Length: 494
Image (cartoon, rainbow, N blue to C red; front, side, top):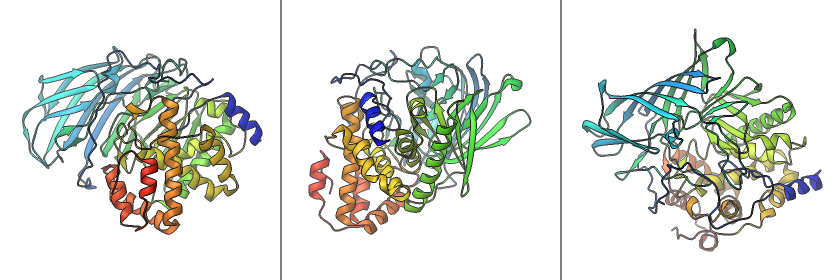
């Protein structure tokens, strides 16, 4: 079995983790990977050092998003009425707001019909690429709330799956078997130290940074008689002609729909965990469900409680994987190559994506400038999963998941300096796992897991930086780790 997996790994370079494209035969590496980004995407590279939010977001005082969406599944068209109740937590008064509008990166996909502020129509705004700038009619004081009403429509693009050596697999849009609404609504980007944080997309990795917010999303279909099966962030409530999904303290709201989805579910504590997969992939769909349910239990014990009432695991009709709030995709190739054992890509990537419900969802970071803060922890979480559920496979995991690619490089590189997909993942994901393993060995299990739990507790609901990571770590150990920092990081952390 393991020999067969080794041969498969030698023949195919698949998606290594969340947020990176899967590949079939390994493409030649280039200094600038030949992947396509929509033509209207700006390409200036941010150079600033991210700063963390100094205050947690109070549980009852988060911004709120209300969306009412009507989906024409066959026409691949969505009409949306949206209200945002935005609370200014920047520490100063604001005279403008900045929203990310990712669908506008695709020509003709996003049509904005109207904007109003506190019920008054607004014309003082500009939409350029993914950035919507709104000039407020009056200053918004700190700790005060304003209400933004938007009406718009989405003409979903075809999510063409080209050679991943040429174009990054697309999630937003539709395929022959499903529609995918991800980063599909305008949202307020974080404001840190007076700057709105909205980075440019890149060929791999993520560029968006999210504040925690509460969501209430009502979804109806133009033809209810042929409505598809829906997987979504949040718990569903069936209404007369629609379904309402609610989720609190979430970074995103994602939705996938297909008339071909089959569904299997498990209850893990308070959470309903559901696996959505296509026909002929039932065994793999059940395996993804089992691995995610086990990971949910392991991480709840090792890190802290899972915060939501649901978790959707979705087979993507594309060779890409991605995490969202209480929701994630797995590449179809992992399902197609599932071999019936836990020693395979489907299992450890499902576990990796589940870990993002802690290291992305609960503790957010700047995924463009410091992607290691979530990706290293999620990769190392795979090791923690195996040691708790399949301890005999830990050495296999190190060999085939991590060291097969002979990783090298500094862990703390931005996505823009990755020098290609393979070089980037080798450093950020795999070198990151090695660093965390050596750190754990150096300070001991008790201190290591006490640190991780404290890191979660102090950072929950925030957007953190590497400085926060090491500051909290220093409170749990006096061990000298300067050699590890010098080995794995290009920056010096005290």
